[in-house]
Length: 255
Image (cartoon, rainbow, N blue to C red; front, side, top):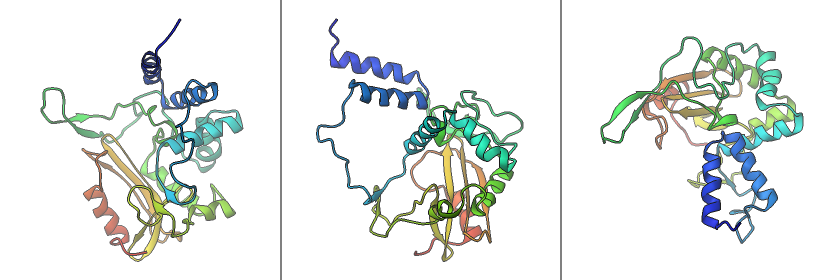
């Protein structure tokens, strides 16, 4: 049987659309290994290593797959065994393919435009997180996030050189891939210059919600927030979030 390129690509695309992100990545890796697809003719990275930074959720997916390959256990099992259980984060869990949040929670609303062209708010609290897997499929509370933040900064999650890497930025010659700005990502954390000091943490957004954690290295002041956002995936900064951040840490400042 002869199958055209177009037919094969369409079929592969239809199959991938039915899979969660973890299985989609595995399918793509398998396709490369078996020769079903090939890298670009040039076969070279778009930029020399160590010259640019770029934040992509797929990096977390690859990390999740590495955890599973090395340990022989699921990513969720290892996160629970190594982090959630030792730190006593009882209100934090991985929902997997279950789209609902158990227990009381703030509902998230996203502004959407249906086919008729109108604009309205849609309750998006019931939403499967499998499209993000290791990048965002954890449900938690602000109390648990505060506990995790302080435990992380005090060396209860990663110790010694591992912890040091989380607060160390690359050389200033490394620039952001998109904006060309100075480096702002360390090993697992983002950094900001706020109120004349470096603040490290992590932010994220999904339909209906914006959340984040952050603190200076000495934990002299911490911030954990979860804010309903009707346009959580829009480009640019959320004005309400920036107002909260500025109140806690001060205005953005030069590095």
